[in-house]
Length: 388
Length: 84
Image (tube, rainbow over all chains, first blue to last red; front, top):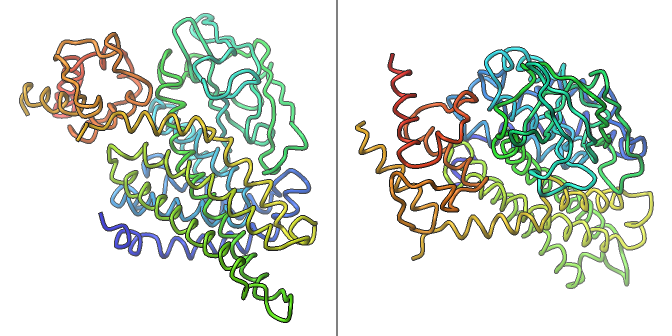
């Protein structure tokens, strides 16, 4: 596979477009988003206008025109969008990411009626989607969720509590994972459902624009047509589809955030003078610059390779997305730390965005599979390989 | 494509996915400990790409994925529906 050839043709225009959108409409609000723990409506409107909420979805669901005939190009363009958003604001990248996670599960496993009902609303951005798996006592082991769905007539009644739900306080529709007598179920939960209380979680370490919240479900009733997929398949198929998309998107977002760190560091070390010369002339500084530049390039190549695999529906696609997220999320923590170090005192103060980048980077190793869970998954993927 | 050819392709994919293990066509892969959540999605992806069918929510029945024979039967059913 010639990644360069695939990427050059498919991604260049998308990169330029999304970089323009993100720098014009998202980046200027990044510090405000961090301070207010909310994404301004003007930013969301600009993203809707640009098509951010349609990107990555199948054409039949309302995704971008041409994505069916050029799935590799569509996957890479979608990645380019997440890189640009991650560079402008990790919070905003995450908001778009969870929309796509929940939406991709719906697009993949929804009935014809569900796709017809929600596809246009999701891809236009009129309805913002999220996915609700995590609970206070259940994280990586999604099959152990305690939120319980009990069959009631031809529908369901659900009780329980979800925690640390990205966009919990801002999404309109959740793909909710609950336990049932027939195994895990996935249910479509509107944010205005009677019996649902949404409790925002303030003061998160980073990515404060995620609008994290707890969802408290007290006898929430679901009609039969709220079921996504079939009972027993809520985690293995529905949630897995969302998480796979999330890992791909987030890997790209990490590349973007790391690039923001790197560009800030490059500007600083060539401007800041000590001992009569720019600090970028010192070899120990050059070492850090070399490491971050190489690290980011490696992560971007992994993302591109994952994008090609995703577009081609290669058997390695899930493994590549997992490895890309694993590498990129650890990489961005190295880069953010080094960029902050290069800034010295100004890197830990409020006058530069470095402290925000550093806090945002920490989130990347926790969500969409912790680093440790991804290591287990990558090992299991490796064990599948036929011995030489 | 004949039933035997479909089963051979599925067998080859499963063998490849399980470190070269030999799996009988009627062997329950979940009882044998081969199946897991990662493999479940890989299997769906494989049959969709290899046999140009679309597995949808109506097909989500564990019995459809339990063995090489069962997966082949699903593929044949989907192909017959598509051809009709």
